[in-house]
Amino acid sequence: MAEKPAPAEAVPAPAGAEILVLVAHPELEQSRANRRMLLAARSLQAVAPPGRIEVRDLYALYPDYLIDVAAEQAALAAAKLVVWQQPVHWYGMPPLLKLWLDDVLAFGWAYGPGGTAVRGKDLWLVATTGGPEDSYRPDSYNRYFFDAFLPPYEQTAALCGMRFLPPLTLHGAHKASEAELAAHAEVYAAKLAGYPDWPEIDSVEPCVECEVPLTARPIDNVMEPV
Ligand SMILES: Cc1cc2nc3c(=O)[nH]c(=O)nc-3n(C[C@H](O)[C@H](O)[C@H](O)COP(=O)(O)O)c2cc1C
Image (cartoon, rainbow, N blue to C red; front, side, top):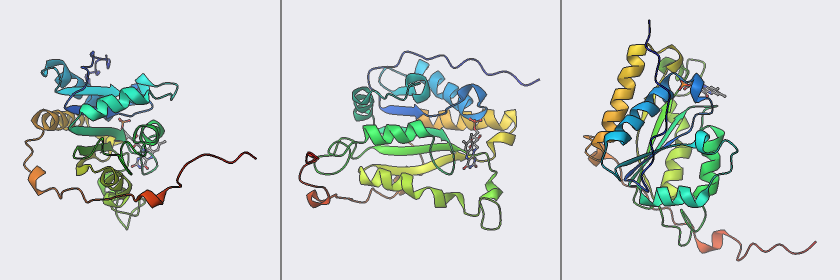
């Protein structure tokens, strides 16, 4: 019989770390893949030196969707590698991760004039899909290669001056065997442990400059009384 994964107990997080893993899964208790991956990242956190890795389970931290922006920005500012670990939902990110972007990557902080807080950091998307790899083809039901769904992530990174590292994707998570899930979690943990010494990292294109001009926004946001 398959071994039941241990409960995803939180390990006390260090105050800011080089690797910031943000996990966004709305139903982690139902998860086969992301739960294992979260546990693998947490196991690494437990043995790594202080300041090396911090794992934040966003749905556990913010069940009410009220994100502590200052805490998230502090964690982000300390990181060199930011990981977005998520199941793919409707060809994109789960809603709390989207809200995290809306709230935390603020104009004038993460992008736009004076918005340099995350510039020079690496962003790594770690995603799982229900659809198998061969469903992400023009002749199958997902119609597009999986890469076609990545530009919003890549451009979000670019707008904020972050380098977008090649994503780690597990396709067909519904049907992956226990052995495949375990192997994938191991690969994930090994990549986290080895960062930034990844063989492919030197061939990743540097981030393109995306300056948002001052004129892109109104001078002030003060609403006229109606
Ligand atoms: C609301 C919702 C939307 C989903 N949308 C997609 C999708 O667009 N493409 C896809 O391949 N799988 C989709 N799935 C399947 C999930 O990606 C899949 O259940 C998940 O990656 C499995 O990981 P887990 O075992 O950690 O839950 C969706 C699942 C849910 C619940």
